Length: 152
Image 1 (cartoon, rainbow, N blue to C red):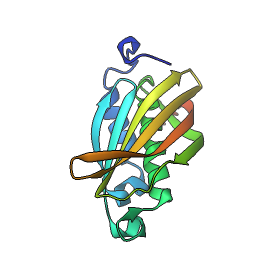
Image 2 (cartoon, rainbow, N blue to C red; image 1 turned 135 degrees about the vertical axis):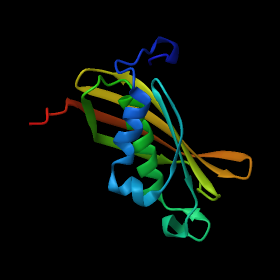
Image 3 (cartoon, helix red, strand yellow; image 1 turned 180 degrees about the horizontal axis):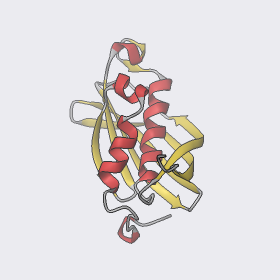
């Protein structure tokens, strides 16, 4: 596992680049979550409860949990990409650990391993109720890294 102390982003503007990468996605605009922490090899997303994201009133459904888990893990890996590069999920696995009953989800992504063409990230998802947080899911994501085509 890569230690946060050992991480030196290849792009000095990694935080803003990663935010723009995520916020440009139409699904992200629809979810309207908050990016609550960004650092080298880490990325946090907070999703307030909305009824349309629920399994039943008050309980988040697995789909939105998996979506923000994948996004947090992938963005944690994306913080290490050089300028002019992007990435895309090639695989992710979600394990639901507890009912997600609460007023918000917090997905804390972290880089596991960064490579030139493949990177690996993980995310733990907590459900918040007031000041209390309970681990409700964990995910592992693999990304394919690629240079963006130059504009013509």
